[in-house]
Length: 264
Image 1 (cartoon, helix red, strand yellow):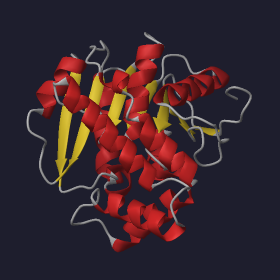
Image 2 (cartoon, rainbow, N blue to C red):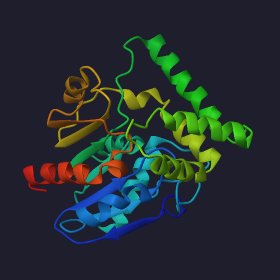
Image 3 (cartoon, rainbow, N blue to C red):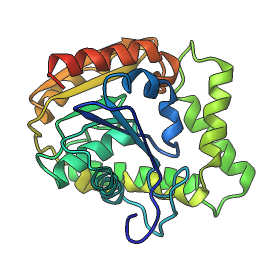
């Protein structure tokens, strides 16, 4: 529980190290269905539904801090000492925030096409960026008509698919995201607009960042290296944002290589 409300999680497998898998915006723990069987053969694997998502309880106000505290509540309940946090998309932002709030708790971070951005340098530009996120969040909220809201979600997701993303997978993702309540979709997106999240404080722990897409973002590896001095960076071309569903074997292999190389 967190603040007296239920946080749903699962635990599979055993091992000397625990992996905690953290899903992205408006998703749920089932987005890691292709990782559990493989990774749980050598590790204990925990998945959770963040507040307002999946089978977890709704909360009045969502924030990345709240999500990180939910991860910590699950960690404590599951008695998972020094876990490796694996975050997809927004889940990577949550994993980073957990490492800030609970230093020396996580043994490592794995960021799957993580939403960790380099914001514009000027204060006014940062404010405008934050306002644009807040406006985007409104388009997913309950104040909009159902059809307009669903259209906004569909357009937003379409920008995340690759040329090889099957129609079946696209529809599966869309159905699951639309099953998330509008208030949660709006609140979780709005959480990104908090400019305090984007301070550039380094975190000294092993980090694997896997970036997917048509082309590698310019200078991203250098930027992330400044945030995570012990970074290993991997670019997977031609794979969509939902890489763990689209190319599970390749993603699982990269995770396992990283874990072995760090004796985790």
